Amino acid sequence: MRHKTKLFFLGVCAMLFSCNSNETKAKKIQEKPSKPNIVVFYVDDLGYGDLGSYGAVGVETPNVDRLAHEGIKFTDAHSSSATCTPSRYSLLTGNYAFRNNAAVLKGDAPLIIDKNIETLPDMLKKGGYKTGVVGKWHLGLGDGNVDWNKEIKPGPLEIGFDYSFLIPSTGDRVPSVYVENHKVVNNSDENDPIKVSYVSKFGDMPDGINNPELLRQKADVQHSGTIVNGISRIGFMDGGTPALWTDEDFPDVLTDKAISFIEGAKSDPFFLFFSFHDIHVPRLPNKKFQGKSTMGPRGDAIVQMDWMTGEVMNALEKLNLLENTLVIFTSDNGPVLNDGYEDLAEEKLGNHKPSGIYRGGKYSAYEAGTRMPTLAFWKGKIMPGISNALWSQVDLYASLADLIKQPITDNAAIDSQNILPVLLSSQEKEGREYLLEESYTLSLRKGNWKYIDPFPEEKTIPDFIEKVKNIEGGHMYSPQLYNLEEDPSEKNNLATQYPEKVAELKSELEKIKNKKS
Image (cartoon, rainbow, N blue to C red; front, top):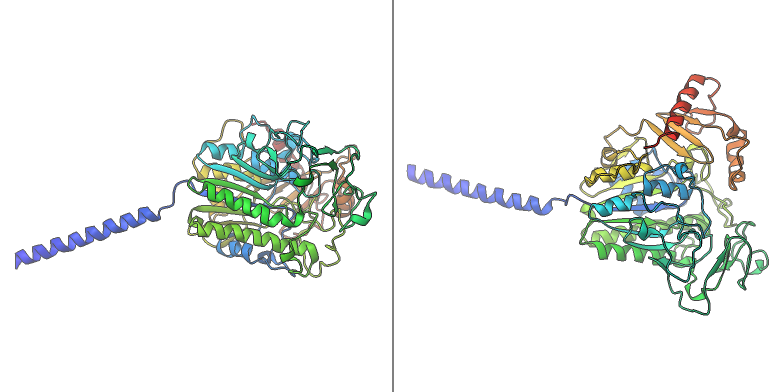
């Protein structure tokens, strides 16, 4: 009897050992590699209220809303600037754009990122990542005297990206061609070379001033340069006929390139910066999205953007990569309706509020200029929730460095703050103590207090300042102070009532401006 009991006991132990061993093997199989893939969806001109999950009316965004419902929806996450070039500069360098006087660039501007500094893709590449950028660039290409018919560099490949497929600047600027790595795509006719000028008209291509009968959308004077695909652009170009894009092809072309990069890089950890053209002007959604919203081309472009997001997410799922991919979805700056073209964005707005409850939009120092609809998704790793933590896109650099345990080079990313716990959990409340917002001036948040530095009247007026005067009113030349908890729409300037708070925040702002490393 004692012998049988002993055998039974040994048998049970063997079974338990076998089960534990199998469980250990299963756990090892299911364990996520230490370096997850990273995908950043970077939408253009998408406002805080432009998604279904943020209260949109008249447009449905089911694919992006899935990220919101299954991941973290942020209510106080910010682009670093109210315009696109500065925001992109800050995200990719970890430095505020004002430190390099980064402003909205011409279509033939030189690369604005110093190729000698460590960038976000540089850092990730050192950590073993394949890095790619697809979509709108608008950070300059070349050295200031670019020849579009030869190798175009420096560019993304010189600042840390392994692969790039670009709209060189914006859809409303020439040259209206794609650039893949160092070369214009389909620039195949040597007798029809591409030439570009931002000084004066030349060549035989029609323009919006002299050939208005060829236009599909009426444009303002700034956007009345060379006509491509029935749309007049900023600047003038000639030649490159086989290389000219068709705007309606953007969703298919860019999405295919993004998915192709993922498929080619899936054996390594990869970083994809998918930088949308939508919903920037000119808004010319593909036929399959036309009429899918109640808001005309702007709303249809939002639907198109949602489809593109869904296609990339579906590709990740088919490749069994969702459980090891951190997805960040956000926008480069706040919304704008009429931004140079008459596309009925204002007339068909209806009850939709692109900025939600917030004041301002693109170009503006008010909250809607930089407060972005922002989502973080990582299947099985990030639990669904809503986060009110305060943070900026400039913080992605330090946070992703911590995620993959990659050191940051000395004097790199000096403005980036590690907020990784915030990105991974809606329960983490500790975001930034101070948050800088760039526009025509600088603003500073501390909790619910917001200070807007006055714009000096003697300073040279930027070209876009006329666009913000109607938004900012006469306040832009005086200090502004708002309590966002009581006044989220920034209607009541408290600067004269709380001079000590103005002095405190202005002092902190000066410290940030004077920071060297």
